[in-house]
Amino acid sequence: MNKKNIFERLTSGEVIPMDDPDYGVIREMVNRTKKLSNQLNRADHVDDIRSILGEIIGKKVDDSTTLFTPFYTNIGINITLGNNVFINHACSFLDLGGIEIKDDVMIGPRVNITSENHPTEIATRKSMVPGKVLIEENVWIGAGATILPGVRIGRNSVVAAGALVNKNVPPNTVVGGIPAKILKKLN
Image (tube, rainbow, N blue to C red; front, top):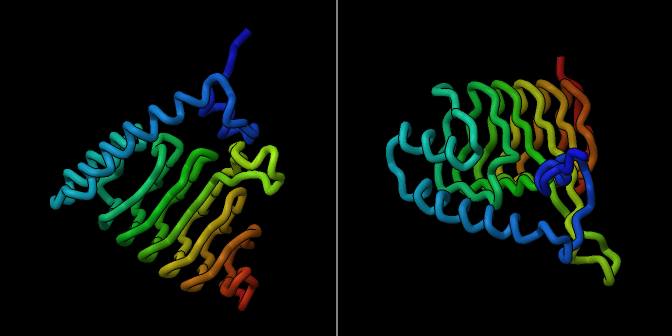
């Protein structure tokens, strides 16, 4: 029998209760990522930033990708970055459920992308409910936007500053507001 590790279980959408015997592995990974994030946020050279970000996510970061610090994440290994990605300062990526960012994406300052949530029921509220976030090619996410778990943002779309995206965004659209609604179609 091939038992999935807790991160594979999360990225496959399994709800994980706090008393899960493997939950301690998440805490260990959070501590590892906090230490690396402190190094990342003190780095001042673009090559050092890319290198440390690569350690955090467990993958090489392409030279065409730019990250302005500070940057925050809780796990890191469930983040996948395409080429020519730009991430502005003070962004927060909670990636237990997985965050995939395709090529040519621009992310404004103070954007929050979260792929994890908790049940509203009191008895199970401390459980982790994952939901992968997928940001397709050539998307622009404006300053201060929040992307919630399970959302897919279609290619060539724009998320307006301050938007709260809780549903999928079709390709070639502009969305904005709380919650985000389609404002217009793009050619």
